[in-house]
Image 1: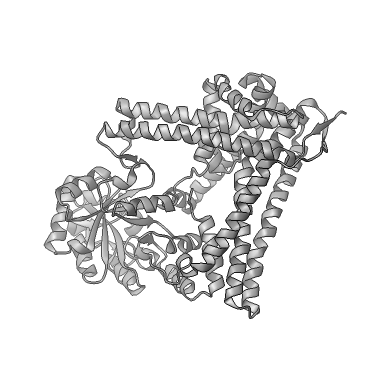
Image 2: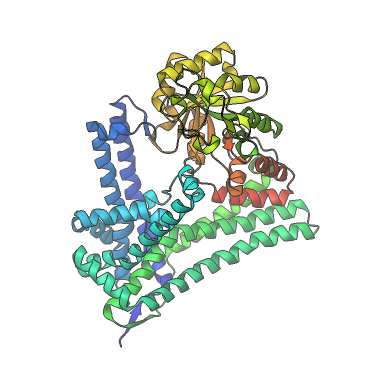
Length: 586
């Protein structure tokens, strides 16, 4: 059986680096024009952004339909350059050619003609939207961080049936990705149609399944080993700081230096992972397609100026970060935690939800506020409840809107009565800020008017923020009563989100990037992050630039705050650097 002679990975690095620079420039240029045109289209509808609570216009106006078309074109363009052109480049490199990177980029763009069909659309949607969610590495840079919002995933995890369904669906989609992993290779490298290439991919995987799995596992083992070795530096430094009496003026710069090296390696792995995975898969395709064994062909390795420049820039980054962070240690790693906590549904998991007891628990645990949900009864009163009915909390599957206040007063939530808005205002007076969410089917302008009226009657305008997932209600309140504090709950947005007409923006965790928070603050608004419950996320957001976070885990948040504020200088560095690395800055 013929042994295929393929180029070693390290010799492909210069060409891949140049490819990354060129495609990044082209794609950023496109995104600049796309964002400007999108903002003009939004402005023509009287909007500054499109968000999760204000998206229906996309399907009901020509501006929205044009935005949708532009978004689809953008997905195809990113697929053409991030995936197709990269496959073409890898195929030529592995075959021993000396391809022109610009020519591969051009061919990637021209390859759009081959995927502008229903099968191609399915491939693009899989690569852009499904791959990031299920962890399949064939992704595009535009949607690399695409996710299922945690408020949805937490519901899925809490229900065994939903969890099992999600696992089965994810497994099935991942299996589809593996079975058709060579579909683009056959089309781009060997001129097959997508239909022919799909059948060919199934045949290759079936015939070579054992070798395919073994090679992929070996590849991943090498990657994780490299990362693990450098990660051990952080652990080593932390241990040494606890056991050796090293002066802080030596230990702090040393710690920063080692962790800067770790971040550089991690960033390199992140940037080069997709190209190297594509290189590996392309090598397997060429081998399986020819029916031969394969080995790397040793060649004289010339030092590339581009690689040398990349190494020099990395070394400069490590040196500058070591000097700057060591000099401004307290600014980079502050001892005091300034982000406050708000009890989700009054007191989170510390007490029955949406009750006066919950507010008492939140106050006792040092929270600065409590978030609660109001709905209107059939006789026009406002009671506190999150779900559409009282089935989960009080065991009665009736909607608040179908009950009178007197009927609601008979209910108990783990022994606690269902409170009215007025009772919650009285319980919070002088102690907590209330974040009152207009909730459910009765969340309308009447509710907005009544909520404002009740808050003003209690003279608590300064200690209440009215929030909602419905942007039109928040815009209405902010326009009609600008003296009221308002907040918009958004888990997805596009456009100038910071210019939305409100005082607070409450962002779902994954949307609360450093860039977004800074943008909102620059417009004089405050940022809430919801709903932060995991320990890792609590650590990240308690050290972020957000103003407050909404959480069910007030006790854990208080304990983590105490732990972080009592940490040693080295622990603060290790914690801070890993937080900056893991915190979603993309």
